[in-house]
Image (cartoon, rainbow, N blue to C red; front, side, top):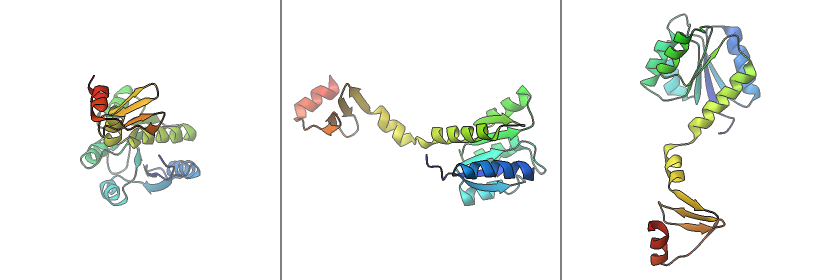
Length: 170
């Protein structure tokens, strides 16, 4: 994951938005900010951020309800950042589609680490996961079940059809 990922911060507290933005920018991220939830779906579709940091208590909407609306359009990682610390609030946030949850007050460096962790999880595409599952390894021998390529020590090996069949199907 490149550090140029775009992060959308949705929080009604200007100081918190500024603090988060400062730390994220210092770690190489692009930052978008919003103080209300009303324009988020449109902003999400237009700007295509890589992750959302979402407060639950917003002046115009509830962050949990907003998360539900976002999930209708996107599977973008959502990290809740809220002053609500009760188990029911955390569970509601995660059950509606949130990927992570932090409570205020928070350590900005821990927030940055969680942003990075959520982005790392997202970087493996379904195609990459499928390709990795199709790669068999036996010591230095690698056999790809998709393209039937065989490598030894990272170098391609030419095999006759019968040799290849024996390797893959035995």
